[in-house]
Image 1 (cartoon, rainbow, N blue to C red):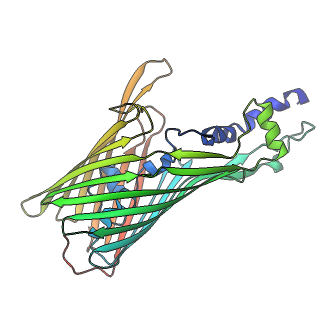
Image 2: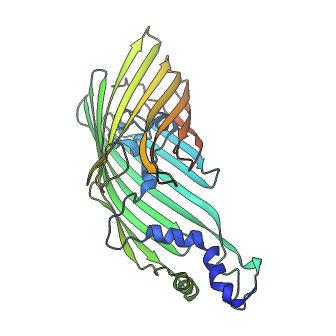
Image 3: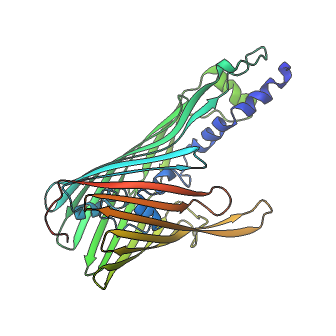
Amino acid sequence: MTKTSFPQIRATAIHLLLWWFTVAVATGQTPKYSNEFLSIGVGARALGMSNAFVSVANDATAGYWNPAGMVHIDANIQVSLMHTEYFAGIASYDYGSIAFNLDENSALGVSYLRFGVDDIPDTSELIDSDGNINYDRIRSFSASDNAFLLSYARKLNSNLSLGVNTKVIRRTAGSFAGAWGFGLDAGIQYTLGDWRFGAMGRDITSTFNAWTYDLDDRMREVFTLTGNEIPENSMEITLPRIILGASRSFRFAQRFGVLASADLNITSDGRRNVLLGGDPFSIDPSLGIELDYNQIIFFRGGIGGYQKYSLPSEKETQSLQMNLGVGVVIRNVLALDYALTDVGDNSIALYSNIFSLRFNINRSERSAN
């Protein structure tokens, strides 16, 4: 191998790392899809209903979906856990939360999310300055997005509840780059008979990620040789979004029930390729349904995530995500949920299997509102 081919080989070897930096850099801009890992959703119940959950959330996952719903948890303490993998196991997505009923009218919750790709080969030192290949010089790193949420909910009366989130975000690309972010969410739920309405404001003050980069001379040389701009410390801003939701429950023959829900996800970061795209506001609707037998066995379905995109042939087409799910509740203590979710119909990814559980501790005897 000659020295003249060395820059080309090194450029190919760290292509993934350069792509990560390109996405992350947002100097003085407010890019679309900033902190988008927080828009995936949590809990197999909600994901099986295509995320139409803002008005439905009434368990420990409410800290993510709508913190106002935590006051409806019918237990002193509830724990929720979820794990799934995307892109044939390349990326892992994990979630855990715990919620406490402080008293009859208030609740507190803590949530943690991580979306990451681990064991990424770092081959930037595979070839030395003399053009020799040494596989012992290959290292690995992780690229991960993490979020920590602290939630509080308060019931104002028997029909109305409010909730807020304080969230801390940590995003890393090995030791090369990292960001800290901070933001606030606020939610409301209102119950009227068999109807429940909800609204969730995410990043209501905008969420700011401060990126810092630690590039040695070797990495700076790689960026220069490959024609990439050397990233500088920067600020990435996530603009607010509002999610409006409504749901209604029906009971049949005492033992059978139906819960139907609908959400409107309204973003403010410019035109998106969703059903109702506009500038600066775009609207992405979703619909969900849950059938139950005696509140023990559940069957779920949903549609949403409408997307318009272009094929390699430059022909425009559309996709619509369709999700399914099942669940079982064991003695009002343990709930096991499964969802089969469609990441997209444009051949980017296949369906994903999602598993989650909820566990009640010291179940409260008070009646649910």
